[in-house]
Image 1 (cartoon, rainbow, N blue to C red):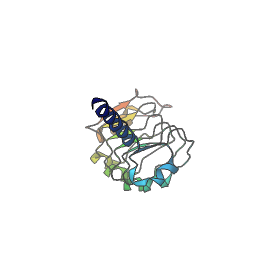
Image 2 (spheres, helix red, strand yellow):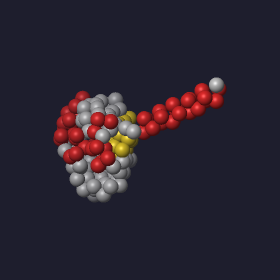
Image 3 (cartoon, helix red, strand yellow):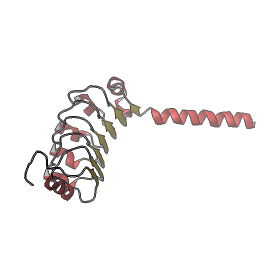
Image 4 (cartoon, helix red, strand yellow):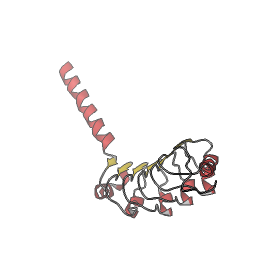
Length: 168
């Protein structure tokens, strides 16, 4: 009796592990076959030059990792992902984010080692609690402007630079 109970418990545990992992994908094609179940999509180091618009079909997406690619722009249509609260777009070639992202439920935004040095004023109303801007050369003035936009966020940044002699 105890052996059967123990085996049943182990079986339930293993099933739970499988269910918990079924919502995470690291292949876009597989994710698109299971659109409704995708909560986490990890596309880092995929040599992507453009943001894959097919991601927008994943209505239940909560976490997106597109880090370490060659993406230059995130489309404004990303705002259609109403459940997205975590975005890691570190080590790309982003220079700005669409202002439409300000109304999204994103609370964690990881952008280190990009070229973003300013945000649209609409981000003052964003839900961002953690913003990572390390390895981005910014003047003190640029950093202060960003800190004003995100008063309730923990902002990680490097020391300000002279950045080629620009005046602050």
